[in-house]
Amino acid sequence: MPPGHGEDGVASFLEAIGTTGPVTEFTPLAYAGNDQGDVIVFIRYAFTVTATGRHATMNMHHYWKLRDGKACYVRNVRAAAGCTVRLGGHTYRATGPELVAWADDKALIASAFNPVLRAGFRILGIRQIMRLHAELTD
Image (cartoon, rainbow, N blue to C red; front, top):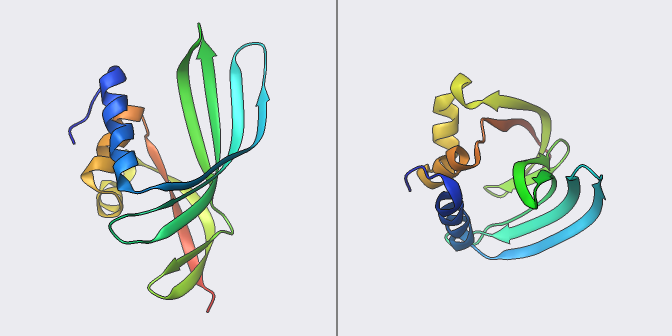
């Protein structure tokens, strides 16, 4: 998927996410806002990847700036430190989250995210990812 811009680019990116697999939970847990149009929400999000059957659950924080009835800025953060991940039959506890800029480690980002996701990053203006260190727990 090539990079896109504007409403068509966002629509294409969201369609690609939707075809990855079904969302099994999207539960807003808490909201906050102000009179200037700033809104933050804490969300429990889960999905299953159709291609692998693997299931993922995470907490996310979303922040929006609304101006003239439209979102002019969006940022989301996944709550990662202390989460557990099950890979290859083993359970790992995530530790030491750190933000990595796209420009600082292109090889890592290319190895971790497929071309569709990387194109989505460009469409949405994502310039950093969170790298987690992990400890085997079993």
